[in-house]
Image (cartoon, rainbow, N blue to C red):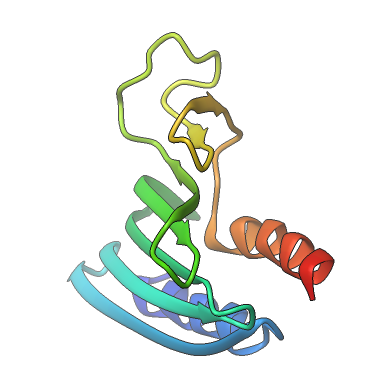
Length: 127
């Protein structure tokens, strides 16, 4: 897989997702196997998901760095997932999740597709 193939796969996930009403994704190819993605996804319930990914591709994509920040229409944090290397006490270090109070919790390594599934479930409950 190349970085262009990776970004195409992300755009496919976004375009096929029923809760996304608008997307703005920027792609920077650093080399054939390294890229940077930054985006904003507007969700059906008027919330927004902001994300950044620094991706290294060998045989498959590896998210060297990521952050997915979900906020409501008033810009209040609903959740954030990242792998910034702080919170060393978390058993899943460096992967963790922050709730709306910004308290960190363990989290599996995340991808945009996994985040969108979590948001879909929460949005469906509130519609």
